Length: 306
Image (cartoon, rainbow, N blue to C red; front, side, top):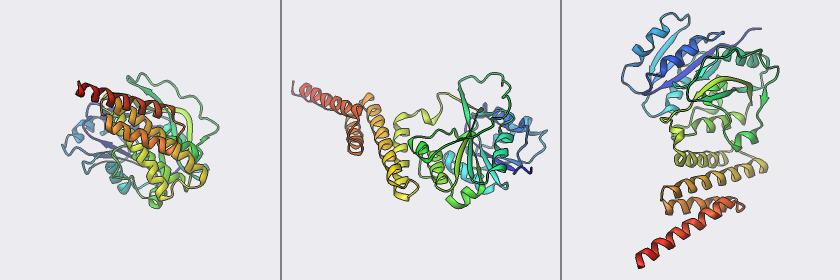
């Protein structure tokens, strides 16, 4: 069986201490990629020196390309445009791969033409330890129905391999989104291709305080915007999926409102909570949050009157 080649896209910005480990995990693959594209999004010129000790003895091309300096979505698009292989894999500069990852994923692409995107299960940890043996390859993939993707993003970006054809057809990552660009991309791909997960923790997702995804207020706002765009552009279509999307949007607005309320931004919180209720009235947390907003405004007005 001929396995398709893989271009690996690795955007990096300001994580020179973690970057060599990510590159080392790519170089340690049992099935080496066709190429590794490191997108330097910081324009500091230090990436070459940081990764040189790792890449000096590799047997596949490694290119460092300048990024636009506008975040991971635009940087990934630079890599997608430059990629030469039939499959494109993504890994962030703070994540790691198990050695069997690419081999197992490319096997499934070679055997099933309906697959457009294959992720893996992920191990979430603050301190990665010694990689245990991954065991034998799973005999089956876990297929992700579109409704599961609409409910939330179950795919760690660093776990994903996708066909180049997906980007030729659907376009690249939406550069106007500051977060959740990956989820929006997967939703567009899922409209045309099957999406699946290798049910083995072949990706190590490192949890740390510097991740943009830790900003819950911004993340919930971007999640709601992803679904709004999906509904408007047709990547979320049909009564059932649209209903799922509306409930998920309500959840995002509700969580965003409650997060805003916790930091004292009562006016913005009330706006988000009202939006949640308008999308899905059966939202107890939204109603209780709205009541807290009104109590807060009442207390402030009484204090001012006193």
